[in-house]
Figure 1 (tube, rainbow, N blue to C red):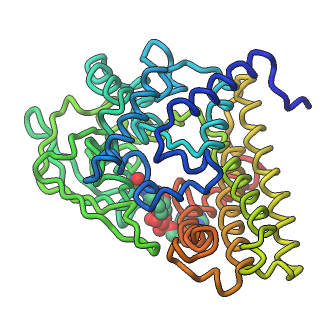
Figure 2 (tube, rainbow, N blue to C red; figure 1 turned 30 degrees about the horizontal axis):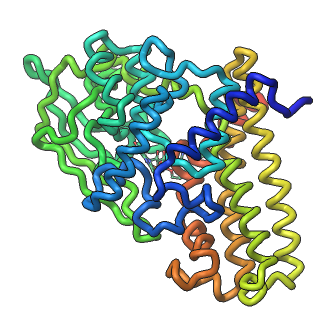
Length: 410
Ligand SMILES: Cc1cc2nc3c(=O)[nH]c(=O)nc-3n(C[C@H](O)[C@H](O)[C@H](O)COP(=O)(O)OP(=O)(O)OC[C@H]3O[C@@H](n4cnc5c(N)ncnc54)[C@H](O)[C@@H]3O)c2cc1C
């Protein structure tokens, strides 16, 4: 197998590489300049969506500058078709684009608007919905949040209870969503709601969009173990949403919300990030500063690092497998589950190994005093939900068992 770029691919890689070096704003350049991306201060670690709504004008400017630079190239939505304002990149070009962005630690722009809502509207939306939403996603002007999960409906999402009752030209929405990532920084929300409580559970659900400032919506941030607020509880109390905001037909929302529309499913960004994290760890352990604070004399740590090196290469090759399938027009299925399962569990093992290398110093949470800016202890906490969101490890194993191995359902 030939892993090297073709001449055209090499030219495109250079274009992306040079663009990042030229246009990535200073505060986002931590990883580019050899750091772990957090060297510019905590304020820049929570992502573009939070930066654009920050109270700090420098953060806001940084987010706008980066969105503008990407929008000029048409690279906010690299995988969308050109006719809808995307870059229409081929599968291999997307792979290269994502690989270079991940190497530089450049934040992606557009979040769920680009990955989920936009492609859903492109396939299922009306012309009016396309005109209303797509340009604002492509300019970085509007950010979206996803309201699927509820306190009683996560893996078993079809049990969702949030009601939308038709009243004239509106739906009136009542209920609660939870774990709504970034909703406190979002402008619009897309949600799955129950429009027919009498129908079998998958058939009474609709897909609807709403301005997040609509009266009756309350977004309440939830604090995680790392003292961050990545997600929220979102409450709906008699929220009136125009019926024209329904995407697709009433009661067909399950099938609309579940369509696998995010074509970039290779997971290459994670693979590149973990490779770089491991490189940084190895370099630090060999440095004078590293020798002072680590337990690198311990064989267990050395052996673990060797295991992590092998595993990051495996993850990279899983990602490559998906890309080469897509390149041949195939649709990855259980292969994406293998990737998610292996990648999320590797993330947790990697952060544990890094932490272990520092012995008791590994407990220091403060970036000023913790080794490597306290990266590994923070990542140790931050990696915990990785095996839960986007389908838990158990759900991925079910998919691999039934669709991959052909085992009967339990
Ligand atoms: C950081 C983070 C961000 C998130 N962001 C969003 C978001 O933006 N929008 C949104 O809508 N949701 C979001 N979620 C919610 C996420 O989709 C759910 O947490 C996930 O689907 C699991 O659902 P649950 O939490 O209700 O757990 P449950 O489904 O109750 O699962 C509990 C446990 O039971 C296991 N389990 C459940 N069913 C089975 C089964 N059939 N077989 C074997 N084991 C099973 C699970 O693996 C898990 O270990 C986010 C979650 C996290 C952690």
